[in-house]
Image 1 (cartoon, rainbow, N blue to C red):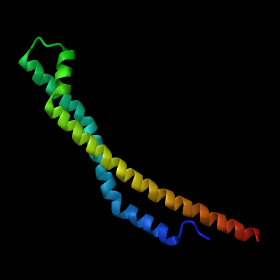
Image 2: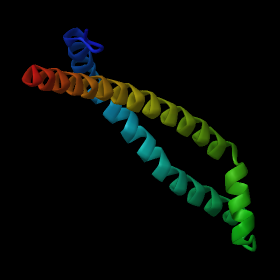
Image 3: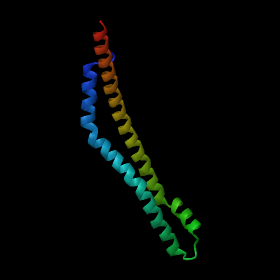
Length: 115
């Protein structure tokens, strides 16, 4: 009896083909926002310093992290992480299905040679 059927493998392969672009975009969005957080922080620190030139770096950083635009960026980053992880887990599940089928097929061939 097969645990993973040929139909399961075909579905997994089809999933990978259909979702390659979705997974790539989710990953790209996440990585972009990881880098953009640094840029946004620097921009907000600069903005804080322009309002108060004697402001220390630590205070500029505090102002940047508390700024509504930075908090909005973090919310977008959270969504990007969620989308990336969903895509990654979907791909991983498909890969595990294919790997299990390969193992199963290999075991069946080995059992055939033993008989």
